Image (cartoon, rainbow, N blue to C red; front, side):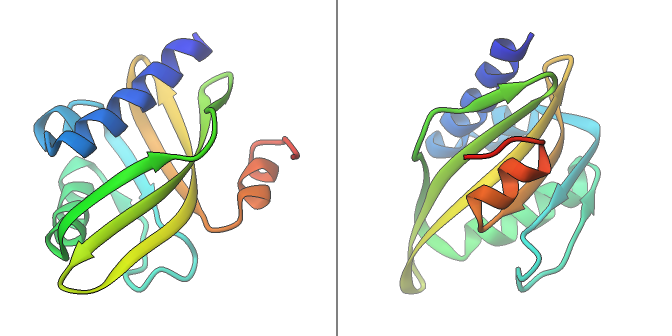
Length: 131
């Protein structure tokens, strides 16, 4: 099951980078929760697909072009996947390059939670792992 969850997360990256937000949205569970990093300007959490998509649309509208680039292999265990990635954005204002780690909780092929961390070690600790 864990490798299947990694494939779900990998598919969300592909959909995001292709700009196919309909496909990306299909991976969201009806009770999905999006938790940005603690210091993100727009505090969360965002609950439900509609709230998550409003947040995402505002985020994506900020740049003319943006992409997610995995930095390392996905780490999986049970229903959680840890993904470390760089988020590149350019367009309205300065270019953005942020390294983030997200802990994805996946059940039955749907993501039920996104929890973001600026500190990779902190993300690993959140799931009981260490570097």
